[in-house]
Length: 518
Image (cartoon, rainbow, N blue to C red):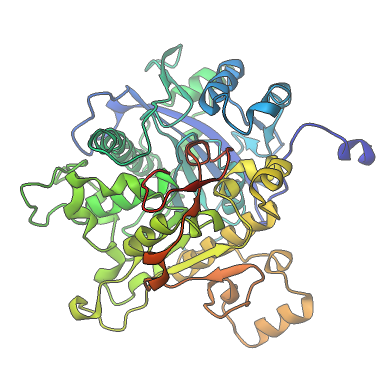
């Protein structure tokens, strides 16, 4: 049957390469069961929803999760509307829906979690925020790969109108009572656009605060209602969340915060909003997240908190209403360790988008030496893989490599994701989080070189964070130093709306010089 597999038209995910099998469960919790971290947004919904990826027992039976959630027809219709007739995807979309129904995430649904083999007897935790057009499933290969190396990853479904479609269940879990549809917002900077993005961020930050409280309660063994479990496992009386009790590393500064595109912007705003909540604020600053003084987040986000930013989209964090926060450096720079726990990975498309690149460098850069309390502290880790597109960090690159190559010229989508995973894992290791070793195949070392590295006591994957040229093929190290050529740059290639929004597809267009259109 092997030859038949090669001709299977249904897109499939590669295998995870970490040493652990991956389990996954859906969670939807009434917000009334959680501590409000801030004033709730006016358009808030009564639940928060997320998927958990986690290391599970090795003998767990594979019970995959559909990549397109139920009701599939409505979700696929929402994606079709979202992409629009002008999308480069439209000419193939007519044949894909039937195949999309059958794509599965290769995880063990609701499997028993593995007892952590770490010294702390707990699993490291990461929260990952999706971009425009994303969802809790849209980055499953990246997040599942991280889980296969010993990380519990929380992937929210944001209900801010950034997903093509999201369903909200009633608090009893019986009915999907409300739809949150995609909210079309222009991408050209204007007062109205900033106000709309501020509104979306307000919802996203509130959700992240609630999710943090949910994680603490789950780890603490507090019984909370999971309406997703009530709905999908009518004949299973297990409290799925109870198995995570006391197995999550949620001590101060240990949770990693990550995101892609708008999700990366969300995490920048989130960690800064929490970290600088008590600083004296000017009258023209209008915070999007007014933290309660009793919030557990205050002790959670510290200078050592790992922050991972994938293809940071900077427009949402340039709002005049939050300019004071924009001018604050990332929290890591308030300690001598500096940017050791801060990682930014760009696609080549975003690297070539000069205006966004300049802002990305500004966001992650350490303070000038003249005003830096810790002279000589390291800056951030910042890289891009050659021949990669904005969608390369999502599932779309590995599921549809033919589109990735034809339309964007992106190459080796599976390898690009592996490079992302390697860099993230090494930053977590350097942040003293216990994660599994990267396999020799992913390190791209033969066994003799691997033995040499081990014999010389090199850090496990030191090459991926090296700044030396050509240490890893096609992996380019950047600095945050301004590039003088940027100011005189000619029109540059910038991703189109469809690429930004969906992490999916679209045409690469040429941006007029000094234009803010994305």
